Image (tube, rainbow, N blue to C red; front, top):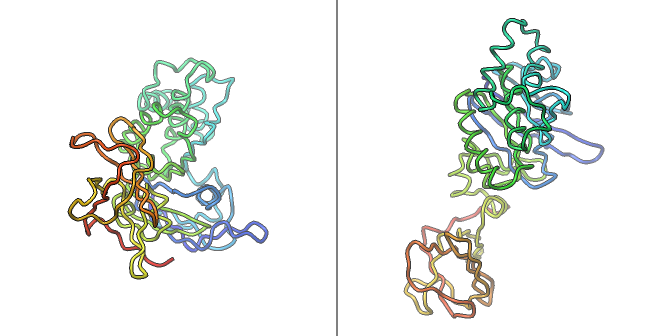
Amino acid sequence: MAKVELKDLTKIYGSNTVVDHINLEVEDGTLVSILGPSGCGKTTTLRMIAGFEMPEEGDVLFDGQSVGKVAVNKRNIGMVFQSYALFPHMTVAQNVSYGLEQHGVSKQEIPGRVQEALEMVHMEEYAKRKPKQLSGGQQQRVALARALVIRPRVLLLDECLSALDKKLRVEMQSELRRILEETGVTTFFVTHDQEEAMTLSDRIVVMRDGIVEQSGTPFEVYEQPASRFVAGFLGKANFIERDGVTYAVRPEKVRIGEEGTSGAKKTGIIKSMVYSGNLTTCTVDCGDGEIVAEISHIDGGRRFERGDRVSAVWSDEAEIRLEEE
């Protein structure tokens, strides 16, 4: 495992600055999700950590030592791509052992290391199968085993769950978290899925236009967003303008009551209601804007309908003051 530092890391393509002097320190054993919209520079940052891209300025350090001029195959990193990139002509065991062979591990040691890696991802029963005989989730596990078997200092995951269906992706999030906790490897996970980042991460880095907008724990970034962009990108938010200041209020902290309910902050007509099983997302047209509330079905109470005139209620503590961008 390694402590990773990015110092003034910058990448420019032509006249376009893709990554703009970002600084980041990640303690060893930390799982960091790099989150942001398409084109924000998150994958380019990952590729510079790996060594696939060379920065115009700045440096990447592992445990205080620069790896900026170290070749990709000498950095001892593991990487899992969105496509998994398994060799179709090789068995599962051969795919996993390939990295060990390239690292010069002795033939006597390889079988034991492969078995250990496959057991970690619960794929030991499939060692003799080819990739085409596996499901998407199983292929993802094999790709992860191949990345971990070399015992990397740093693990890089690039949208590696995005090809899976939602149910399998949720299952693999829990599995991935378990595996990374067992290995303790420092991990960078690039994703555009906010829920995925919240579920997996010790720390979230939100990027926009090549810069880091905010870095912190999932709780910090969600409950204390540094800007309107972060509040709107990580989860849902209502934005309230008052006295020249912008506040964010999360929908789950808004309560819908009958018109005239005590403590009401806004009044309007229910424009839409979307049922999602455990809650209903309710959009209230207040004339000067809309307020979105997520109503839990656990607490019971009156069930409102589209067209009802209602009050939107939230506490002063629910309002997050946002800094000017």
